[in-house]
Image 1 (cartoon, rainbow, N blue to C red):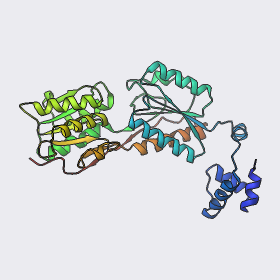
Image 2: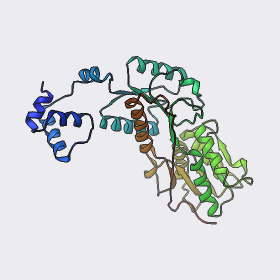
Image 3: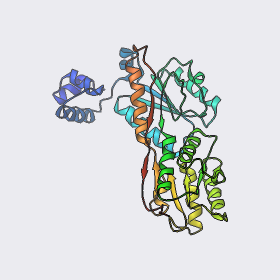
Image 4: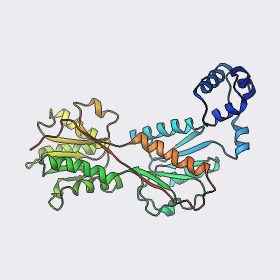
Amino acid sequence: MPTIKDVAKDSGVGVGTISRYLNNKPVTADNRQKIAHSIKKLGYERNELARGLKTNRTYVIGVVIPDLTDIFATMLVQTIEQIAYNHGYNTITCDSRGDDALEREKIKLLVRRDVDGLIVFPSNDKATADTYGKLDIPLVLINTNISDSLFDTIRSDDFEAGKQAGNYFYKHGHQRVAVITQMRNRPGYLRAHGFFSEFNPSYDMSLLYDGDFSIDQGYAAMKAIIEREDRPTGVFTTNYYTTIGALRYCREAHLEFPRDISFIGFDNIGAIPILGPPLTIIEQPIVEIGKQAVSLLLQQIEHPDISSRTPIEMLLKTRLIITDSVKSI
């Protein structure tokens, strides 16, 4: 098996420079190219066991998410894995299936595997600091806003996302806009209340369609909205799956935006771009969430001596992508 000395001999680059390359330290572009070529040519593989013994790390990050079939979570994991790999870390991903008890078991399993840190997308968005407070390991929580958390947290600014949609409708003269959301889900609650804040105190709460974040819910709510005698002038969906369901109903009913009704959806991913004409839509910074989650975790892993460090709560802005699905009235 080739060694780092073999790579040095083949590439003509010093062992120290190769070590910096392998540990993602600054290396000139020329040397980087030579080292990469020699590693590929020789089939060199880093001895992770020796590396771990030297640094007292496993260079593995544990990731726990509530649903591997959820497109948001899948894209998040893909980003986390790639960014972690770019920094010399591998990942182990566990699916908690939306179950609090299973999530705790998965976390215990990863800790027993001596991962260097954890990135957790909580299955219960009402989790408290006590839920994770006993973990003596670097940890970043995603999509939760535990105000008294002992750990770094990162999420989209859901309230502001709702305000963006509400403000856009309001500026275009809309006074009666239906909202399809899930109020018992914290992001859904915040997105809806951000939306309401642009209309209060005049928002008609009969236009709130509260259910779950599912395609069926989006479909059923959109059908009910269209069948109202006092049909609203617009619809705002606060989640990817409810957006898909609402679009599916509109497609079956041969409805067009904004001719028949104005529409703002959520999450410009997956099937949405191919389900019809481009939508005005709220886009979450999914890739940026993954990047920042890894960055926050590596800061903790690589600087464990900062005992007085104040936990970071990071809010990332969403983006309103504007097309012609909302008309002025």
